[in-house]
Amino acid sequence: MLECKVYAAKDLRVSEASTPVPGPGEVLVRLGAAGICGSDIHYYVHGRVGSFAIREPLTPGHEASGIVAAVGAGVTRVAPGERIAIDPSSPCGHCARCRDGRENLCSEMRFLGSASVFPHVQGMFREYFLTPEQRCIAVRSEISLQEIAMSEPLAVALHSVRRAGNLLDRDVLVTGGGTIGCMMVLAARRAGARRITVADVLDYPLEIARMVGADATIRIDRHEPDASLAAQCGEPDVAFEVSGAVSALNTCLQTVRRGATIVQVGTLPPEGAQLPLNLVMQRELDLLGSLRFGNVFGDAVAAIASRQVDVRPVISASHPLAEAAAAIELARDKTRSMKIHLVPG
Ligand SMILES: [Zn+2]
Ligand SMILES: [Zn+2]
Image 1 (cartoon, rainbow, N blue to C red):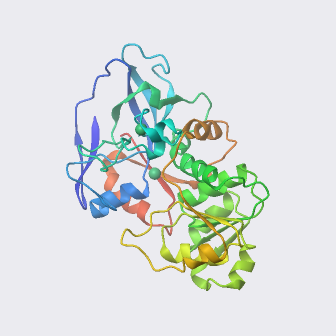
Image 2 (cartoon, protein in one colour):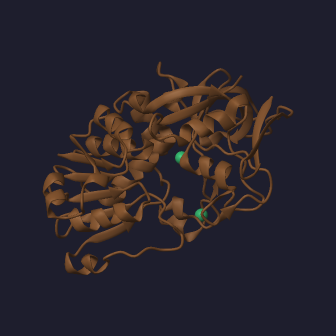
C-alpha cells in the first residue's frame, strides 16, 4: 500500500508500506478521500504548525472517509464494505476536562496527523490504516466519499457555533472565506442566523461562500475597518474570525455591535499581535476561543449524510496519493482551489 510521509519542510515522500492487520476492537480502513487542510499544508511547507514541529516522519491527514476493509475481533459498529467517516480525535475520556464534556481540551488528546505529541500521531494520507471502532461512523446514504470527508471541517464549525450561543435571528460576520469559513456559513445558517456576511481578500473564496448561502460578501482589503464597513456588515451580533489574520480580528473588534460575541477560530500568529483590545471592555464584547471540536462529530456526519448541509460547492478536486506534493501545492493556491482531496491509486 502507498503511504505519504513528511520528513521535513518540502520533503514529502510517498512510499510502499505493508498493510496493517486489525487487532481486537480495530478496523482496517481503505482510504476513501482525505481532505488537505491548512495544518497539512503547514507541515509540508514549513515542517511545523505553530509550535508543533516534525521530529520524526509524519503522515498528515485528519479529514477522511473510508471503506471498511476488515475488522478485528469483537467489532460490532461497522462491517466490511461499509462507508465510514473517521473521527480523528481521541480524548482520554477520564481527565477533568473530558468529564466536564469539553473533550477537545483534553490534556491527553491524541489527534490524527498531528505532531503535537511525540511519538507523533500518524494521520490518514495512506491507502490503508487502522482505527479503533469507536472512531468510525457508518454512512448509509448515497453521498460521495469526498462529502463524507467534509465531516471534520463541518464539526469545527458546529463547535464554533455552539461556543457562540444562540444564533437565531442574529446577524453574523465571518472573516475568512476558505473551507472553514464556508462551513461556518453552513453551520450558522443551520442554527438560524439571519444575515451572514463573509469577508476575504480574494474573490474566489467569496464566490464559493455565496454558493453555500452567504447573504453578502466583502473584499475586506478594499475597506478600512470603520463605521461604513460596520454599516455594510449590518453591525453583526456575532463574528467568527476564521482567517487567523490579525487585521481580520481587528475588523471584528471594530465592526461588531456593542455587546457582541467574537469567536476566534483561526490560528493567529504565535508571536502575538497589536490590537485595540480596550474595545473588549468599552463595547463589552465577549471574545471567545474555539479549538477543533467537542462532541459534535456525529452531528456533522448526520447533517452531511442527509444533505441537510450541502458541502458540495466547497469540494474542488481529487488527486491520487502518489501526487500528494503537487496536490498540496494546488491546495495552497486560494485563488483557484478550496478543498482538495487525496484518493488511493
Ligand atoms: Zn482540518
Ligand atoms: Zn481527557
